[in-house]
Image (cartoon, rainbow, N blue to C red; front, side):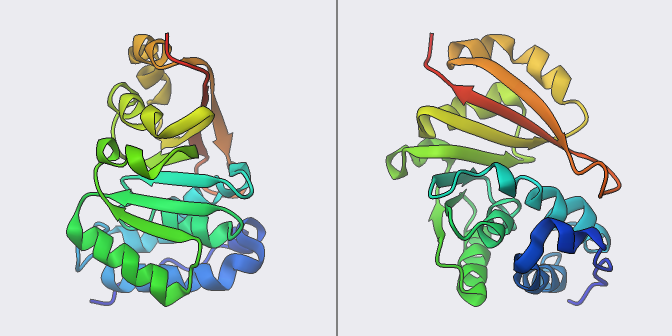
Length: 213
């Protein structure tokens, strides 16, 4: 099924630099096949660049060079494949429990020639032995009260959580205060990225795990 892909925004070059051409390949293929195999909704191709790809790519500068990074609930590869494209100097392990999605991720990894990606069919709690990881990313997986207990065990000491979140992130933080404290998160911040180049800023929950209480 071919779906009209959103015209590439002018900001794509600014955000992705010399990784833009590979990102174009990924965008085109996701728009072509994503709805058919249940990776994206019927309206998402029309906003694929601004709402999804570039939204994810804005996180790329925060990745640590040479780090092993787990992307939990990778789905269509958002943000995992986008970050792997943008940061060939980091190793991404895409953790996804659904077979059809892991099949997609494996096929795209091979098609795009990404040598810094491993796809793991598992739930987060089943992937601890694949770690430890220096950073963990996630997008549209679950609220912090559930996501933090699932992801902290994947991290090495002093590891970092990078979660793409929606407009209610501050409410999530309030609801998760006890969970954050119990899992060793003493300091955290919400970054707003790309508000000057995209229609809506990317909200990123960023926290370092210092040790459980």
